Every structure is written in structure tokens, then in C-alpha cells.
Amino acid sequence: MTSASMLFRSTASSSSSSSSSSSWSRAGCRTKSSTGCHFSSSSKNRGKRVSIESGNTKRRNDACTAQKRRTPNCFRRSSTTIITRAMVAAVTAAAAAFGASTAGEVENKNKKTRKLNKLPTRMVVETAMLAAMTGLSFHLSASFRLETYLGSLFPLPIVVASARWGDVAAWRTLLVAFLLLTLLSGPLRASNYACLHGFTGLALGMCWKRKFSWVQSVPISALARTIGVFSSLAISSLVIRENVLRLMVQQVYALIDQICATLGATFVPNMTAILCVAFVFVILNSLSYTLILHLVYSIALVTATPDGNFSNAPLKVRRSLGLPSAFMQ
Image (cartoon, rainbow, N blue to C red; front, side, top):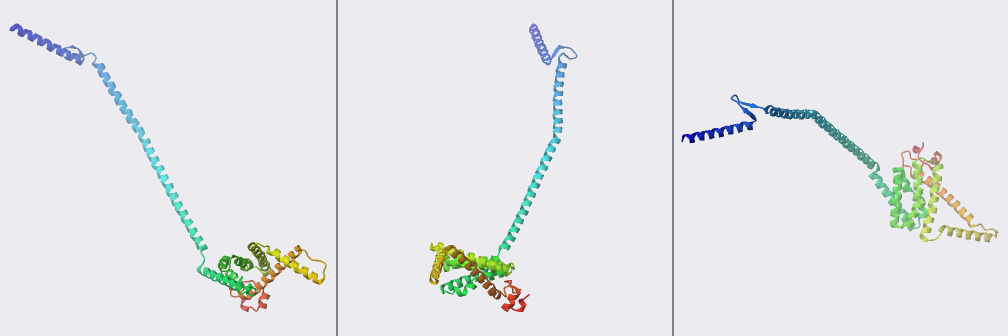
């Protein structure tokens, strides 16, 4: 029993010593003493740990420094972005304000233009009445063959419209009368009125509205009348598909030939000479017609203007026509 117990104790002690030595060896001790463990490689390991820790600390410090350095740039970038956005917003607002002001100016200008282009109600009513009177009078005179006696009165409504409201009213009167006659008498009769009387009335109204003298207004209105006569002949020729002017010249040539044969004359004028004579007679007819219109309208338009002299008649003519002295200058 004693030997067995001693053997067990020695085995246990050896096992404990081996376990302790193995634990010390794991810890890195080569020798064991009574004072403790002597480390042979612990300083190296510790230096490694310290160097690793110092490296980590240095990295952290570098990261913090870099972060600190980056922070002002971030602030600068953010402030620059804010300033840029503010500038863009300001420019956008200014552009919107300018666009609104421009739109307002355009709208105001359009309103003023509409006001200027808008005709007064009284002007529209008078123009319509004058055009209706012109169309009906011309239609009735053509129907009852009274055009020869009332021919000097057909341009009068257009001249009255020009005297009261200007050239625009005169043009509108002519246009409405033309449309009315187109419905009542047909386009040929309406075109004859516009060529023979309408353009003459327009020429008279424009000349008198601009205070032209009779030396200027008589030839201008006579020229308008002459152009109107030949235009009427051209339109009539186009409608009936015959040269009306040529037919007239041939008839005049036949009449002159008969007269020469009756008188025993040995010469007969050619067609060109007859055409030139006809043209001269048309001009003379237009001059006499417009001169008569000047005289008649000087009396008819006494109250058309405040001074009573819308036709701008000379003083001797007004005295000879017996106009009131209140209207004489």
C-alpha cells in the first residue's frame, strides 16, 4: 500500500509538473524560477504589439487630419453650390419678371392698337346709311333711266363720308355700296358704279381733305374719272366678250365716212386718229364733269366742316356762288 501510494504521488507530481511546464512554455517562458518567469521573446512580441498599435494610432490620426483638411473644402463646395443656386434663382426670377413686364407691355400695346383700330359707332352707322343711300339711288336711277340727270350726285355720299370721318370711312362707304349693288343689280352694274363714280368721289374726298387747291384737285379727279371710264369699258368688254371700244371707234369711223361722203370730201381719217380724238374727248368730258362737281359740292358741303369750305373753293368762286359771308375767310 505504501509503495503504491508513493508511486501514485510521484506520477501525479510528474504530471502536474509537466502540465505546469507546458503552460509556462505556452506562455513563452523558457525557464522557471522561484521569482517568476523569465521571458526571452516577450519584449519582441511587446514591441510588435506597440508598433502595431502605434501604426493604427498614426493611421487614425492621419484619417482625422485628412478629415479636418477636407472639412473646409466641403464647406466651400456647399457654400459655392448655395451661391450658384441662389444666382440661378435670381436670374430666373429676373427673367420671369422681365417676361411678365414685356408681356404686359405687349398687351398694353395691343390694347392701344385695338382702340385705335376700333371705329366709332356713329361712324359705322353713318357709313352704312350713306352706302345704302348710294346703292339704292344708283339702282333706282338705272332702273328708271334717270342716271343722266342724277349722275352728279352719286359721288356725293363718298365725299360726305370723307369730310366727316376721313379716308377710311370713304373707302368703307364705297365697299359697302359695291356689295349692295352686287346683290341688287349684279356685279357688272356694281363695277360700273365703282369705276365711274366711286373712284371719282374718293379722289375728290382725298384731295379736299388734304386742302388741295382746285388747280390740283380738278386734274386729279378728272384723271380718276378717265381711268374709271376706260376701266368700265374693259369690264364690259370682258363680260360680253366683245371689244366695246373697238366697236365704238368703228361706229364713229362709219359716221365720219358718211359725213365726208355727203360733203364730197376726198379724205377719210384713219382708225388711229379717231381713237386719239375719242381719248381727247373723254378727257375733256372728265374735266368738265369734275369741274361741275366742284361747283355743286361747294354748295352742298357748306355745313360739312366748321369753316364751311371743305371743297377749298377760291374766294371769288364762293362769292359768285352766293355763299354766306360767315363762311368766307
